[in-house]
Image 1 (cartoon, rainbow, N blue to C red):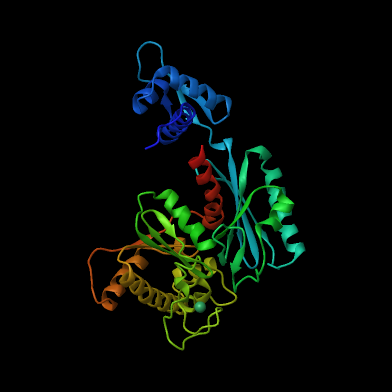
Image 2 (cartoon, rainbow, N blue to C red):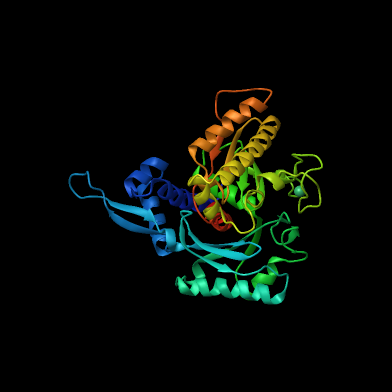
Length: 373
Ligand SMILES: [Zn+2]
């Protein structure tokens, strides 16, 4: 291994101390020195630099101590913020996310998607208005992530494929020109999966299913999303569930999208809220439709579980409406469908947070900042 230079060691100590405070929330310099095995004068020097750079703050004193009480340090979550934007066919959702990965503000705007200059300038206008509205100092913004219903290039600068949005040829430059901030495109189901991973870092191998208006998915191996050679890994919404079945927007017949997406569940006049209100009030037609939906979902989940034996997380806009009884029903149904019944349930609810795509797209910038500090 190459020897670390003095500058490298300094950089490493600076980062280690920041991450140690981040992990421990509030901690004294003595505990940092002890925890990291770094001398107290070195810890002091880096704490001063972190204070000067506005990344940490003094946050009270240690309570359970006799004599002079030691000062506690914590990170400043608002030192940097990332903006996340979910682009949907008929609306956009904008969220601000701090260094702890918490949503600090959000807004929704109705706006029909159009691959046209006016649309990009309007979206950018809403983002700039949002930044001004929540009084976010510009120099603290790390970047803007866009969660897109479609595939994006591996470097996140170009939209590659989307039958839902007509996105041909759109690059991040289109937004960067308006916003003057770094921008990144991310596949929306990956954003939602990232958000779940952020809240449950213990997840190692799993399949994430986003039960949104459209179906989406992501494969997580060893805590990381597997994108595949050209980003098509995890696009399980287009696996055939019923040969010669309903027509999918991708052009094929019988894709899981046509049976397991929220759009497949709802009638044109319904929203998830109104559907579940009726279903929970005992509306027979809705109860029956929900049962049919769960039956298709059980078949789909069973197929996936036969491909990779791991936990399957159900997230997306529909997930917060699912009750424990629904998970139990799915589990039992799967037992009747599978070749290998097992007692242990493997279905898990996703992160119960709204705006998970917008927040997940902002998290890319937060993670990158934490990795490079
Ligand atoms: Zn399809």
